[in-house]
Length: 161
Ligand code: COA
Image 1 (cartoon, rainbow, N blue to C red):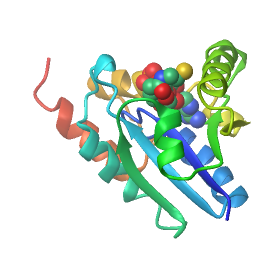
Image 2: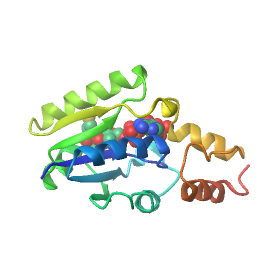
Image 3: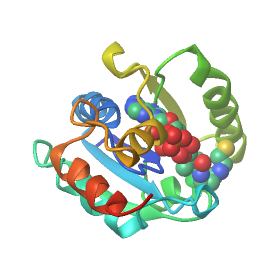
Image 4: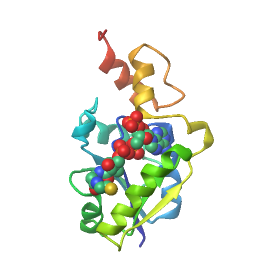
């Protein structure tokens, strides 16, 4: 049974993340989406809400579950008996950060491999920050996020200047 962890802040989940998840779901018997509390990033949505927004979009994959984590990712992986971490590479600009993170995680725990998949190129410029910025100023984010996320973004920014 091959188990991978897909970690991230997911503030909020986008179609780009779901594209990575679909690829991971094809390759692994079990996938756990691990939502980092990421307090340092001052997320718009609390972790429990981010989990809920993801969970509502994983119905096509019964072997995918969603949970939160705190602390070191590799420790979470070991505690959940995972074999690998999966990350998406949207563009060359992601490479350096991802390369360093993969090597650091390997240093911390050599048993866990990091694997990279390329999301569909239509998502190469999508990021949670940009989506939030577009939503904040009333732009249409339907191309980038599922309907439940678009609705929560609208609510979150309603009445804010
Ligand atoms: N589609 C759309 N956007 C994507 C994407 C994709 N396929 N892949 C990445 N992104 C975007 C995200 O939306 C996010 O955008 P934002 O910065 O505007 O919010 C950005 O790329 C990176 O986010 P994400 O992939 O969620 O990673 P992260 O940097 O938020 O999370 C952790 C990184 C949580 C996995 C990492 O910090 C971690 O493991 N922390 C735990 C502590 C630890 O173990 N540290 C040692 C690791 S070396």
